[in-house]
Image 1 (spheres, each protein chain N blue to C red):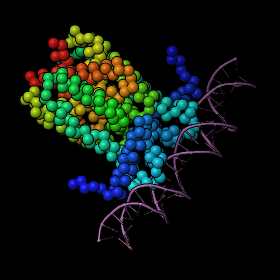
Image 2: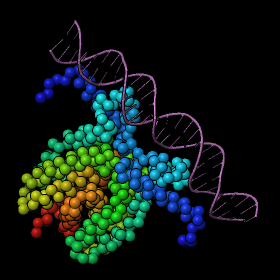
Image 3: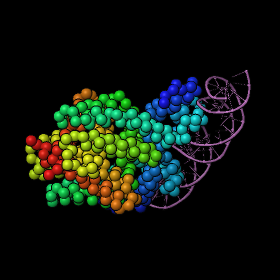
Length: 208
Length: 208
DNA sequence: CGATTGTGGTTACAGTTGTTCACTGACTGA
DNA sequence: TCAGTCAGTGAACAACTGTAACCACAATCG
């Protein structure tokens, strides 16, 4: 499947990636619907018309960014929601993983949080589709847990969606405390863990 | 406190409200950071320069919109989170109330959901401050419940925040199903109610 | 090798943007 | 009544926008 790309294709991918990187940087302080085509090309250092060789519009670029930000995240679901360890251990692991991810890719996280309800329909839909996939994957993982015996598919999906939304909320909170003192960041982590613990308790007493 | 305004002040308020209404309409299909000053004045039907008589910038207008969308909502907290009725009744009441509010003020809800993580800092902060107030009020209401005996202040605030975020998520889901068939809307209401029930169950088993 | 493909550059266009300035004329308060 | 206040106007500014046409030239393919 992966034969080495020609020099030409490789260079094109490189330029395309430069577009994505530059856009992500610019989007830290504005929304996609106000991102100008010229603004991006200026940041990349190419002519305005070069943009069209890679994207139809800035909305198109946004969809590509969704793919970049969320597409590579699916494999992490399995290990994060795995049944290993007791409940509190799993929660601590998940919160820690989210914190690390926000630290490593703050611009990606900010972009998703911002554009999830943002002004560009196609991007909203792309994010919605990815999050729905996440929920399905979390559901599939939850179904493996022994605690899920007796749960209906609908209830499992409900719980999975709650978890996914909670992850996003937590990520957004970490984002807000990115350059806050460590004390504040620890407080955020603590609140997030307590929220998840409460949901986890609700889960254990859901039946009966 | 409220003596009748002069003709002049009254007319000014009217124009100001026209700005807010027009902006809210325009913001259904874009984000605040891309809303142009001229765009708004054009929709209102006044000269561009008239804008400055009312707002310093579009960000300023956004903050005013936050006030309009959330400021009048505080009195509803008390009755919604009141201890009257059993748990399922309260949940049903809350979900129904959210659904009605989204139906009545869809543009306001969309604006809040969109700009909560949007590209304009001052607006984000204004929304954050209002939501923090909501959380405090929900916490104060929860403290009255007998179920809250033995809860620490910190845990109560955590739960209140979870409820507030859940309300927003629910509102956003209703927003997405605004012009969907009744069947879909009912499904959304059902999922929202089950989410809140799970949280409620977690709440009852939090201690011990 | 020669012919073709296609990324990126250049120039140009018509509209739009935020902001300034000087202005009008209806309302206001003494 | 009369001077003053001030919401809204109109014209002008420089800077910006998306997009179209045409060009250059290096990588590719037959």
